[in-house]
Image 1: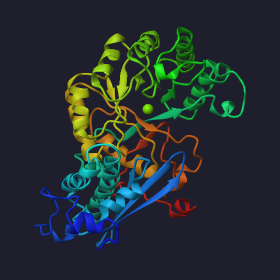
Image 2: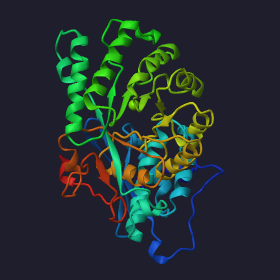
Image 3: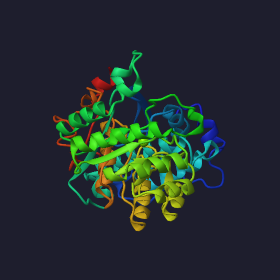
Image 4: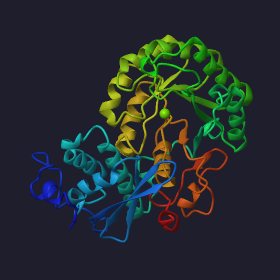
Length: 409
Ligand code: MG
């Protein structure tokens, strides 16, 4: 039994459950898979983000590993644990709906709730894989590819910027970006992304507008990077929801000659209509989606053809199965996917399995080039990423285990 402070609220009073209580006590099932969740733990590891690692314990000889997007997962796990203890972890879909229902008072289908659901859901797949002896991708319907292309999130000029009075235009120079891009390519990646929303001139940022000179600085950065690496590597640039439709559209139009693979989050994330305006303003592909969760969140963006590429964050969007639902709708609408990912090797492997299991993923993010011990978090002999790709593992479950020495450190 869970000792969560929310147990009374969630189970005894049914405060979080109400009429749509999706718990099941008895089911017909092969005795080998007749197992129960006995508890859930969440550990926070301080990487370049506070990483939320989740362990789901069972009464069988297996545990599941998952990862929730950075944020208050520990508190949400404590809220959900009493609703899950005693349930069969193999019923992944039902338990996702059960968790979402339990969290409805906390904004179940929105906000941080679905990040926690995602982290637990990934751990359920790991359990199911270990119980059946199959890799997660196989349980998800099989794979389209043996390796997943990884794109490197990259930063130029940051170290130089710290503690100096230098002109930011010198620090975030096109040359600095080109140099960093060369290093990423030399590390073996054939796909990369830079932030393009660095502030290089005084501006009233509340207006979401940029001067023509500020825009030209961004154009010069993109031009320098393309010149350095050529036209072949996948190349994206991120604007982090900062700009107005007219400024974002102007940037997108001026970037047309450089054939970038996407311009990310040009405008605030809420409205498909504003994205569609930017999309229709130029031939530059527009990407959005790291802040959109569940299939319901994607329906307006995809059915209104508001974006060219989507980027669900698999540790946030509702889990692997929810990602598959989103991917199916995207594919039906002719939209490819470059999933957002800032996670440890645990979350990244969850993303690798599901990215291999759908047709339309072309590149998965890696956000930890600056974390020298990222590969120390797993127990595999080799670095996870090799030549800019991750092999889809054949081992049961996620096929990756935590190095507890590194986690404890
Ligand atoms: Mg982004």
